[in-house]
Amino acid sequence: MSELWKMTAVEAVTRLKKKEISPLDLVEASARRIAEIEPAVNAMPTLCLDRAQDHAKRVMAGGAACEASGEAGWLAGLPVSIKDLTDVGGVRTTYGSPIFADHVPAKSHPLVERIERKGGIVMGKSNTPEFGAGGSTFNEVFGRTRNPWNTALTCGGSTGGGSVSVATGEVFLAHGSDHGGSLRRPGTYCSTVGIRPSAGRVTRGTSNNLYSPQSVQGPMARNVADLALFLDTMAGFCPQDAMTFDAPARSFSDAIASPVKPRRVAITMDFGGKFELDREIREICWKMAQRFEELGCIVEEKSPDFGPVDEVFMALRSQQFVVDRELQIEQHRDKFKPDIIWNTELGLKQTASKLAWAERERAALYRRMNEFFQTYDLLVTPGAPTGAFDVMLRAPATIAGKKLDNYMSGSTLNSAITVTGSPAIALPCGFDSFGRPVGLQLVGKPRGEAALLAAASLYEKLVGLDKLLPIDPKPGTVPPSVP
Image 1 (cartoon, one colour):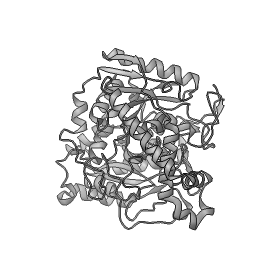
Image 2: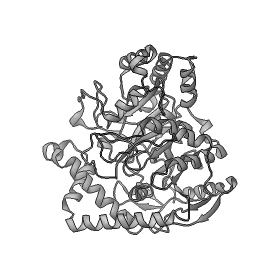
Image 3: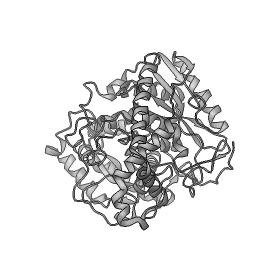
Image 4: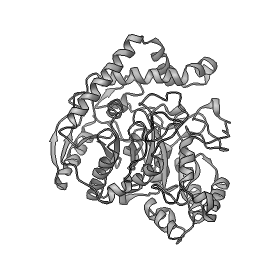
């Protein structure tokens, strides 16, 4: 019983349903693991263990607490983490900001309500950069979250705490969000899996950017089957989010139980020369992406035309920052980190004509991607341009030997896919010469999560890296920068 935390989420839920173990057993195992691991990684700085125990008891008692037990994504009393950007009623929720350091919301976010209704037990809040802005997880409220493969390194961002919480076995599943790669970079850096779903697949509930497809909510896990289970938990129409739609008639878990391989797979390392990446990352990802041939897929080097995608992304992202942060910065400018102020002021300075241009370019890219997917079933890219970097830095010092222009420059491989509207999965594919995890980014057709998860599941079984998790944190040193 002391090692229940080592189980996969699917295995744990199966045993919960058979009553071989109880939700309280898992809550206690999770709490012990958190106490053991947290000093080394700082992944879950806010806990709500009494609340978790009370919820576990309600699930065990049945009745209204189990009314969703026949639905897809039923978790039956499984411990999970919730990103600290997302409200949990009665639990300190800071958004990584000193402005909200003592904030305790009275009501949970609609997605948290859905997760809890489906038997997920919230153990606590996972750490995030301030308001989720950044590719390294740190803030002035809770400090830095460290990579369990080498605690001298970053875990990525902004769902860094969530990725670490599942990689180390603190919880079985992690909730997160993704704008420019926040479910994908931490997956790549921590050898976990994270999916950025299509806009509308999962509710964003209380967002002020309710009609923007840029930011989405989604799951992280140790393997693809667990990821599919948690996406089943999250997916579906929500009256508080006008972009949401009904969950599929066939669950994502069922889709990967009998997966269909992609027929044609396109590989691109740099999006047709558009982006830089370190040499070793390129070599590893190129070699490992070609392994789709072992599944019987036709594999070709091919990239869609992404056009001026980086400039488009920054224009749209900056507008979203204006919506979210303009009024707060007017009131609390001294409490915001410079990156957020810069991104917001970039939006305030751009013209209506610039925004109109960005929207036209986004629409044109969507049409080109749609044409691309008439030929290919899957697009495979590197998950990140570098290995995990120094935990004390906000971004990599260099990519391929070149200095970065801004804090988002390390996320361009991910943010380009955000603009396309396609779902994307971070999937482990190996380790570099310094022992840092390396991952692929698998990109599917819009609303094509079932086929995307199936492809990821087949590849995962081929490579077998999911068997390495969960892990105990390992101390280490920062590798030198390499081209």
